Image 1: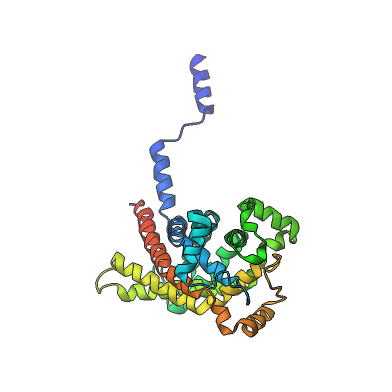
Image 2: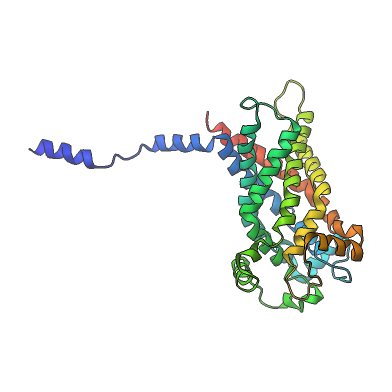
Length: 329
């Protein structure tokens, strides 16, 4: 009968999803604490890195110079002017595209995994954590994020230095430079396969774990101190200050690991001036040839960038996360 056929056909047809239900489902997913932290972390990373991109590149150029290299033995201001004169505004931002491609997933995984690990460390859901537990959860988040995104970090380092006027590189800055993916392919084919993309990860993890742990621990402690009694949140200015303080403390304590990471990332580049065999070998050579200060090369532009970087990162993270959490209402 026609009626039965119609009934049979309509039963086989997929029922279109209600648009309002789908929107509500998306809002519910996005408003989950871990997922909201993941998304907000990615946005915060892109904002903070773009703000301080020139200082980030200058720091790397300072770090990779071994003894006898004078090209970037300059003050911060003169170093920035040198980049501007020789490469223009593109030089100030060189490597930032790759950096953002790296930092968005890196920061997203870091903030998301911290909130994930924190759930297991809380005595009660949403309860306050002891500073030591914050340190441990932050360290685990740092290891997780760096493992996922390290190949992009090593490529970003190569892109940051390959156009600089380092005499030993033989005028590379005047030639057509490879981009991010081309650099990754070249490293993979000519420097040892997948291991080449993870060169320097041991000193990186050794530095990132305590850095991220200290960053989260210090920020949440200072943020709590800055929160007026009877209120849940400090003002935006106080959040900025807490972010700047946490970044400065964490960077100063772990900076030598960052120098080692950069040195190992370019350890196989021809003409760069050093070939370290191990972490201890690198430390011994750096201290003997460059003094203890060699482990802190580039820390001045690094500290100058830490304040606006971490301040903008934490503020944009909290604002974006709170927006996503509000979607649940």
